[in-house]
Image 1 (cartoon, rainbow, N blue to C red):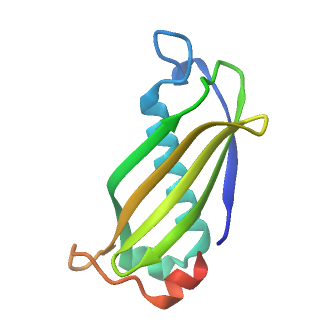
Image 2: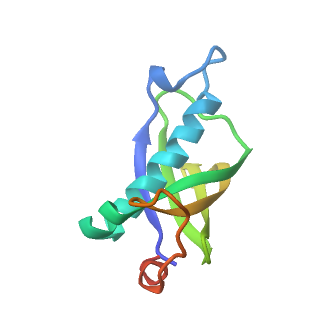
Image 3: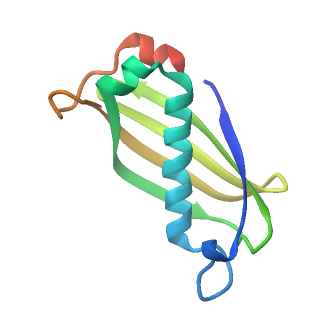
Length: 126
């Protein structure tokens, strides 16, 4: 299991009417860190041949995040089998878990636009 992470500084654009990070922003962060991890680990050939689609998504919100805080997005693949992958994203501020996400992704073939069994060489990368 390879962990991929990045940091983000919360800006005014991330906030909702209650002045904490908007729930929609969490979903965007989860999607962005998943894409970043994928693009970091695979070749351009693989990027041209395959992509992922989100099938289901669950986020547990534990603590609010406020303007000016530095957020660490941490992700890893929990399981990868057949057509599907389960990815975890932890959203932290100062090592405090503020949100936890578990997302089910389906591996897709870019040429056929249909689900594709995940090749072992892709599984081994994560």
